[in-house]
Length: 69
Length: 536
Image 1 (cartoon, rainbow over the protein chains, first blue to last red):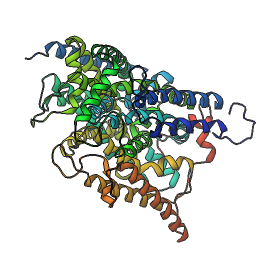
Image 2 (image 1 turned 180 degrees about the horizontal axis):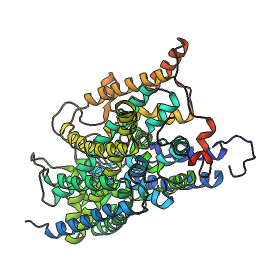
Image 3 (image 1 turned 180 degrees about the vertical axis):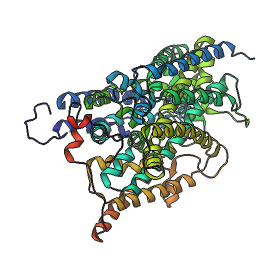
């Protein structure tokens, strides 16, 4: 939006926004992580993979913020 | 008194220091005149990234996180962990929506979601519905904060209602005095305390219990022994869809609450909001680990404190765990963190609910020519009334888990989604369709909640938020979050109603917002014009 030409309509549309779909959908697909094994540092898959999704969420939102500001 | 003297002294000291800060906050970044709703209620809308991060984080991470979620994990296992995907999903979900909300609110001087709806759909009736819904939905959420403070005090051996009355008198007094500035400043202290306590808890306690692996093994062993089909350290076929609908439903609900929006509107520009949406998940790490305190309590053999009715109160499980594992002085610090962690959001919630009443009910229907000073005065009084309403919620609703107080609030607030969140994107809906959807969504939500029993105390109604699909005649044990189902009813009715009203050529309200106002940012001349009288 920083490169907006004068007279061009304002918008928050950007193909980068589609990246936001990933962290919204991924944590809701319970079949991906609803298991005990394999464990990581003693954490069952169910817990460590969902905690790892936080990083996916932060990465995606940060990228979209940087690319669209 | 009892074995909790050190804890009590530390708790009381920290509590007093924080209360004093609340009063000082009135002078912080002092405006020329605090006697207007924008100053008292939105802190002057000048907050940068850091303050916003603390402020929004402050009202998201509450007694819900520290008391209710671990209590559910302790009792039922994996299902309680839905709070983690909920906080992962929510930020990307609202990333674009909140930036639009900021822009349109700053161009038109909206303080509440109902302000927006009134202007967007040209319907005072729909705005009133949104305002009342926000007000009612906030009360059980504040009630949950009260339950959190109560749990801490119970664990320290104080029982009865007196301590809560004192705590809320302090809260009420400094909220009354300083408005949003009080919780914003206190949020720093609260989050610092919480980080210290939680880091200590998640490093020290599992180490003492033989590592994370044995914590999970102990929990798995406990759930294997119970007859309940839906508990365990992973999900079962009965609660898998409940998990998904709880996470998604809670995420959709969060920023519809008037108080979440208060923190967002108080930020300086769109960039502050978007940066925060990327930075707020830092709290989610903590949230996940805090939820697992429920399993640590199982591994440590912690027993919840007995309630007045002779039954164990699962809400006390985290405070009881701290009491068991930490030295007394540090348990006191931890209790203060939990207690203040409940007070800050309670303050923000009651301010937001008060703003809602003043703007959309008082000025709209009771005193059309209210001055700024009158508005601020009414807001302050209503913020007190809302706190009383929360106490009533505790007495009247008595769900199996305290988390259901928040989830029942969610069932209610979700019904504003089509008007507020979808309204930011499209003007397609007819105001009549939205009102019909809101009404039927709310009715069906209440009907579902009515059908949910509480097995813990034998009550047949309003015992939780997990709606059994067997109520529809399906042969299954599966349950879904009632709020999610009610929202679907709402959306279907809103779409059908809109088509019907259009076909019948029923007059629709006028839209007084313009397309490019949804993208206006700091520096835009329109943004600076704050419309205090609200003559949209």
